[in-house]
Image 1 (cartoon, rainbow, N blue to C red):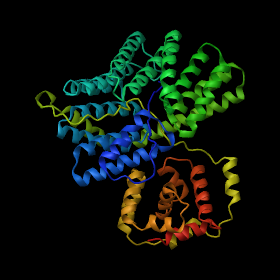
Image 2 (image 1 turned 45 degrees about the vertical axis):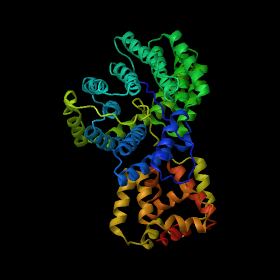
Image 3 (image 1 turned 120 degrees about the vertical axis):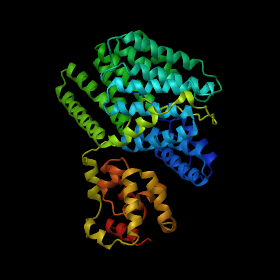
Image 4 (image 1 turned 30 degrees about the vertical axis):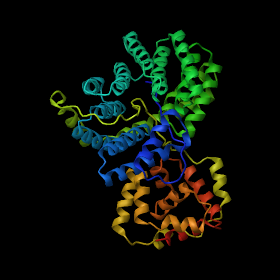
Length: 491
C-alpha cells in the first residue's frame, strides 16, 4: 500500500532555547513550513522540552513533547522507541483525562500496529476507540481535525498491502468526506492548509489505484496549487510518485521514469525507506516495459534491499510487552464515566500515515573510497585508541551508551550534563566546529566506531566517515589518530 505522510520541520537557529513556551512555538511553527535539513533539531527541541517540563512538573508540556517525539520516531520507523513514548503519553493523557491527546496518541498507535503487520480487524478496534475519545473532546476545532484523520484511518483499514480492496468506492467516499471536512476548518487556523494537503494526498492516490485518473489528476492539481504556496518536502515526493504511477499505468513509461527519478533523488537524500520501497518496483517496471532490462534489474535489486530493511525494522521494533501494556491502558479507559478535562489546544497534526525512515544502509561508493584515500594512513587502529580513552565514570558512561542506542537526542542532552566542559573546550580551541560537529565528537568520546555512529544517528557509513574527515580538516589535524587522542583527553 502506498503510504502518505507529512513531516514538517522548523527553520530555527542553533541557539539553545530554554523557555518551554518558546520551544512549543518553534515546534508548532514547523507545520506551516517543511525545511528538511532541520528535522533532527525538531526532535532535539522536543526532547529538551520534555526535560524542562519534567523539572517543572508541567504535565501538559510533557505530553506535548511526548507526542512530538513519538510522531517523529514513528516517521523514522523506530518502532521500539515510538512504542515507549506512546505508552508514557497514553498513561499521562489518561491520568489527565485529556481525550484529545488520547485520540491522537491512539491514532499513531494504530498506524504502528499496521507497520508491524497486525491484521485489520485488530487495528479497527483502536480506530473505534479514537472515535469514542473524540466524542469527549471539548474543543470543536480539535474534534474536527481529529475527525478528518479518523476518516482517513478508517478508509485505510479496508485496504490491503497494495492499497486496494473489494469496495474502493467506499474508501474513496470516506477520503472525499475527509477532504471536504478539511475545507471547513476556519481560515485563521494555521493547520487548515496542511490538513487539506494531508487529506488530498490520500484521496488522489486511492483514485489513481482505482484507475479514476480524471479525479486523481483533479486532486493532484489542487495539491500542486497548495504546495506552491506551502512547500512541503515529503508531500512533493508523494506527488511525484503518484504522477509517475499514473503515467506508468497509461503506458507513458518515459514520462513515468522522469517523475520517478525526481522522487528517488529526493527520497534518497532523506533516506526515506518507505518511499523508496514504493518507487523502486514502479521504476523497475517502467524500464521493463521499455525493454531496458539492465536498468530494470538494478532497481529490482534495490526494491528487494528495501523490503529486507523493512522486514528487519519490524523485527527489531516489535515489543510485545509494551504493546500488551498499551492495549490494557486503552481498553481499560471507561470513558463514559470519566469527566472530560480540557487543556489548552495543542495545534499539532497527526502523523498517522507517516512511514518514513532515515536509515538506508549503503555500501561504500567509489566516491567515498576516494574520500578515504585522501586521508593519511592511520598509524594506530581504533582498537588501540580505545585503550587510551579514559575509563572513569564507568557507570555514567554505561548509561550514555545505552541512551545513544535508544534515543540519540536524549543522549546529547545527558552527555552535556555528564561532560559539561566538553563543548566549551572544543569550541574555544576549534571555533570552526558547529553543534553537529560537537555532537559527532561526543559519540567519538564514547568510543563508538563509525558503523555504530551511523546506526545510532540514522545516517550512512559514507556520511559518517565524510563528517569525520571534515571535522579533522576544520581542526587542522594531520591524521585522524590526533582527533581520537584530542577528544579522549577532554574530561
